[in-house]
Length: 246
Image 1 (cartoon, rainbow, N blue to C red):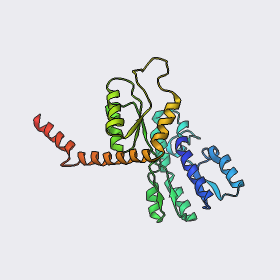
Image 2: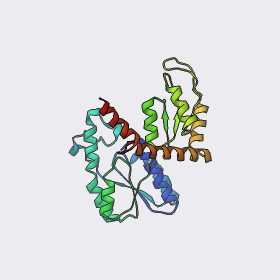
Image 3: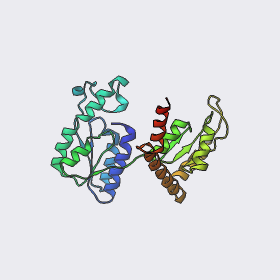
Image 4: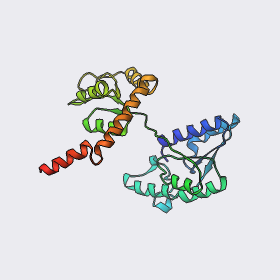
């Protein structure tokens, strides 16, 4: 339903097939061609992988015929219709599950009802967090969002107090890696950060012992932030004190 969502899902199915597991990718008529050549090559190599196509209810949801992918929505106003169409896929998917009796269902976040469908038939549903880290300009709101999400950050400050926030993330809390930005720049056309620096920062954030330590610290801060907003926590108490002062 969206290229960025389809790619990791298809990759997961291919990994399953390479381990000797039968993998079926459920798609729609106009989305299936996006991965059909790749799947056919795997089949020619002897992998037990296939694509099962179900009709996408474009017309029933008030969409133009052939609108089956986020990239084909004619205007943002049609997004609710598109989400409605996705919801209408639950019934045909459940019918397919009843016929195939799979051992596991891997579903993307675009299909929140997949959990309900899997539970009905007692099929395990694989859920995984697809966000490995944030690239942030280090604005304070973005910094707090990164902390509460519990994922590490690649920092790229642009101006204002963002360079101070960057130091908090990388040097104090130690939950991020900087790309090397050292000066203000928002509109000028000049090189501030090299692509090699970006690559190095991402690898440092995602791979190795240091990356795991950063990830662990990020998870600890997430839990601390969660406790702070609960009744009796520091943020909860501060808001109460503020309202009482008013």
